[in-house]
Length: 270
Image 1 (cartoon, rainbow, N blue to C red):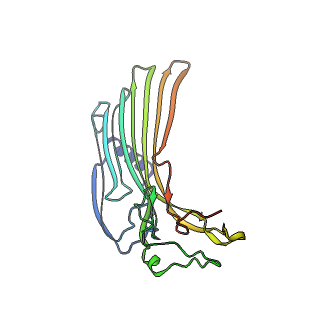
Image 2 (cartoon, rainbow, N blue to C red):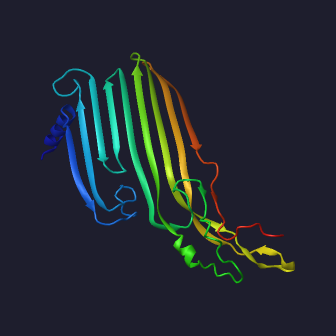
Image 3 (cartoon, rainbow, N blue to C red):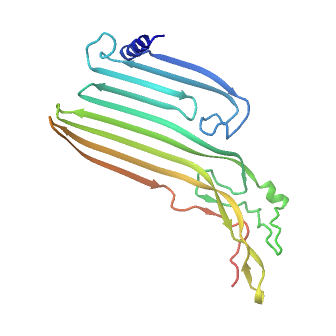
C-alpha cells in the first residue's frame, strides 16, 4: 500500500462511512472479580456482545449538503457498554448525547456477619451473634455459630455517566455552546477500621479500653456529580472573546454509615 493509497482510503472513509452491526457471544469459564474488574465479565457463563455504528446525512457521499447524523454503541451486553448519538448542520448547530457504564469489581471472596445490602449505610448483626470474645488475654476467636453467620458478598462500585452537548451559531461572529454531564456512582468500597474492644478489669474493677482490633467493612458509595459548561463566543476580524461559566455540583446521598459493635453490646463502666 502506497502513502497515496492510504490517503485515498482515509478520505473515502470520511466521505462514505461504513455502517455496521456486530453480534457475538462468548463464555467465561470461571467467576473472577479480578478478570472482570472493568470489563463486566466477572461472572461465569455466556455473554452476548453487540457493536454498531450508523452514520448518514446529505453531507456524506455525493451530496452537497451540510447535515450529518450518527448513532453508535460499543460492548452492549456488558457493564462497560457505551451509547452515543449526534446530529449537526455544519456551521449552524449541533446536538449530541452520550451514555456509558463502568463497574469496578473489587472482590467476590469477601465475607461478613453484618446484615445489610451492599451499598447501604446501616448494618446490623444477627441477634444470635453475641459478641466476639475479648476477655484477657483475648483470643478474638469466633465461635462456631459466629463462623456460620459469615455471608459472602460481591463488592463492586458502579458508574453511570450521561452527557449532553449542544451548540448554535447565530452568524459568523456569534455562537453559544453547552455541555452537561451527569454522573451516578453507587456500590461500596472496602474500608479498614479499628474496632475498639473492652479489655479485662482495670484498677478498681473498672473495665478499660484495650488494644484495637481491625475490621474490614463495606463503605457505601452513593454519589451524584453534575457538571455544566456554558460559553458565548464572539469572533471578529482581528480578535475574539469568550464568556464562559463552569459549575460542578457534588452530592453524597449518605450522611452517615453505622455498624453494630461486634466486641461490645453494652456501655463500658467508668
